[in-house]
Length: 95
Image 1 (cartoon, rainbow, N blue to C red):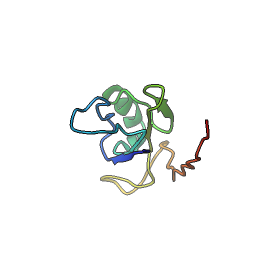
Image 2 (tube, rainbow, N blue to C red):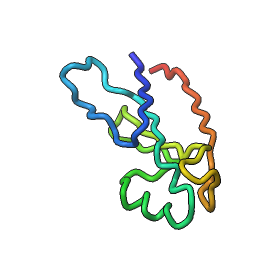
Image 3 (cartoon, rainbow, N blue to C red):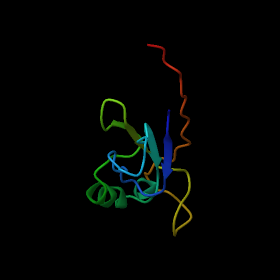
Image 4 (tube, one colour):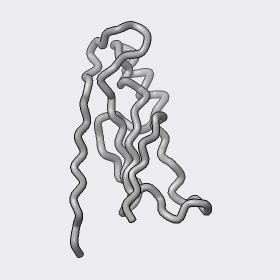
């Protein structure tokens, strides 16, 4: 079974959960807007351990991605905070 989890806040879900039969293979999150306005991007990096716009490998079979998103929060603009529309292609791998 292949489980994809979409979670707003960019903290990985615990991989070992007794109530869940299958841990997410891929978790996709957002929330940070990558700081949205310079220099807040530096504060986001201090607050959130996982950099945005990168695929992180949590274990051999578990991955985590944080999108910087395209939108804004508060002021309706971005300054030196690249927006992103994330496209993820899933492919079946035969052993």
